[in-house]
Image: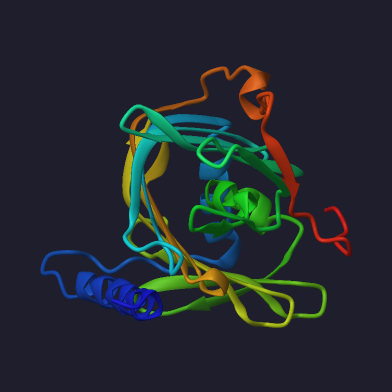
Length: 266
């Protein structure tokens, strides 16, 4: 099935599911919250997560791949926006992604290449075509909601928080489930208003006094790329060695810069 159609069906299913919840017998309707209350709840939950360690199952779908690429490995995250994802198949490393929030590296052993660039720019290889900051930002909602203009749109089933730039243009939309106060769906936009990314977050589970999604499905229209991450054996707020977010480039590996010459660092 075409990825764009799949994303549309996913969004329809999300809204239908939330609508269906309202019809459950014996379930009290959610009370009304203000924008500040919703923003505070979503932000404070993400602030409780400083580091994340997990096993991960990864699936990549894109036009460059004849069939979906499936592999498994581990994921490490640390606020703000530090990310490491290493995935293997049949005991061989398929890719190793490292990002410190400013710079990023994609090491592909099979190609003997390391692709480098800004963390908010897309790295492209193996059917992958996405920015590491898009992924690491999915669990750092406080950064998304702080020091930004916000607009609030309540519906019977969920709240939509519109994150706006100084001109009033939408940077992203966060759909918050009214019954769980969890972010279920996200859309982000390019400066020209075109859709940059869609993400569905599901299978939330409580760890201590915070809640984490165990399933993340992310779609980038520009490369028609779909990335699914399923997390297990999750641990939060355990110390991480700073070396986790630095890539040691092996000898004999070619470095390919993917930084736009006109790019301005964040």
